[in-house]
Image (tube, rainbow, N blue to C red):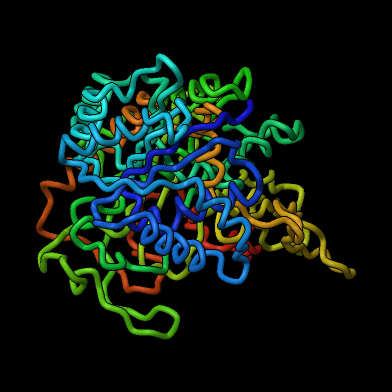
Length: 500
């Protein structure tokens, strides 16, 4: 699938996402010669800048990100692709002016156009309506694609309402709902690890796997986003989107091909197979908490309630965990534990697959007193790795065992990391939608978490807390099905916990 020249129209080009992700990603694509000749970028912003002022800002964005790797020749070529267009997204005249600019024969903009909406979800409807009213979605001379950043709604009802607005102006094939987590190389490697290694497939089911954990932990707090975060919370911000998406990749059946629709069909099947959580069972399947004052890397930090723009009586969760079951042939009875939190002990994203205990009678009359279960550990970030933990005999005359790991490095030392946005922005040019979300995926994910959110919304009297810098609330252990199960927070072999 080849990338075609296109005109990228970026709404919110002066915003934070553009500064730290989009512009550096486009620069790196140009540096690697992945942007086709004729690809241009229209940066839309409200600020009263001319082209020279914009290019000065653009240079600062890139230099700040790439630092010593800044390439003057690449930046010159990159900057020549840009056109700064001043316009307020709430003013109809700005769209008429944009249509005039795009159709100006002297500018020679490609008729393939991708609109990147790096804006508030509340503005999606109006922007789409005004773009449509100015005939900017018509595909008579080239394709039109729209990239939408999450959140895709606030709950199931709002997601469906947003979809109705989108479908008034666009077909599903034109919509690219971006979840940058799916662009991470290691997340895609989960698919390769599962489906390109025949030795694992016979074990990847309820007969051999005890449980699966998916963790996304952050050391940082809400970083000045109090107003947004207090209306969202950890469940909406991370679990409903990123972690459920990772779960589908772990649990899905092999697709008939890597073609986009085949891949997304299998992900939707997983989401639709997840056992619904009735409201009366929410507390047995979900847990929430909020970080209190504590110490992170030797520095004392505030609790959530002391952060700016957070109401003093807020019960918004900064930690959320839930237990899910996939009621299909492969996974029936295997619990999936998902958790995310801010101000935790370490920043990492991991998938930890715990296998069942071996039959123990073999070691009954030996000196082996404990034995860990086998684990497959997938490090997503910051450490990208695949590890398989196994039990081996220690050297010596006694029958003693220890855990060792087989490591499969994802990246060689001379291979540099690629930001997820580079992959996804290039996929838009190729028309490859496999790593973007289809609406039925979004809808199914909201159906899973909606009962939890509705229950939490009416329980405003109390929320558990955990000290900043810890691994979260101890009480979240009550989600586990067995006494022997516990949160796995390390990618290195852990001490033996279980008696044989």
